[in-house]
Image 1 (cartoon, helix red, strand yellow):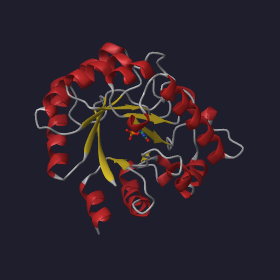
Image 2: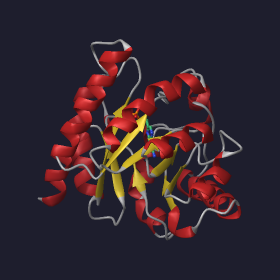
Image 3: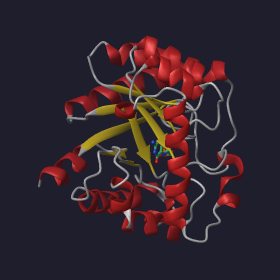
Length: 251
Ligand code: PMM
């Protein structure tokens, strides 16, 4: 199971603030993750936390492109966490080699065709709408079967757009239009997602359903969950801290 390390470049990600300091902090953090054995560094410039407002394409590019260019020099494998095809294209030019789209191609009508043209691994996450009002979409009869059906629809759309089967990765999208009960039901049935025949990425790290209002307190639960997921056949986990996850996987 691979470890994808999160590198969010949003104004609230680094304590010191300011564009230059954000850049320096991001590069420092990337090198730290590399020294800890990270497999993929997931660079994102747009917050998708519940309630988050969107930023402009230019703002997103200004945040991620310089950081990707710099990290790429180290030879690290980089994914770009974006819903925008323009950001995906420029990120790939800058050195990213995986596209991580939390909207599974739903936010930008050009995304699937762009991913097909770029011919790189494409992560399609389960998504029901933008973060601003996603909590109102957390309504399911049977969450597991509905999320699987909706992921299957995205797989069909991706294949139809020309994305190769071997480039497709799926993600159940924990915390995206899902409450705590929904997230746990999906985790309990993660083998059903693995059985779809595509690599599965799971992003649970420090999310609210792991308990507590302070994200730091959710870290222990995240590591426990990684231990549990490490025997399920999933492809990778997306986490904030790299070292403890690497350790628990190899323990
Ligand atoms: N979660 C967040 C952002 N990007 N990408 C994928 N593929 N899966 C996720 O679960 C996911 C993601 C939000 O978490 P963060 O605010 O801690 O980055």
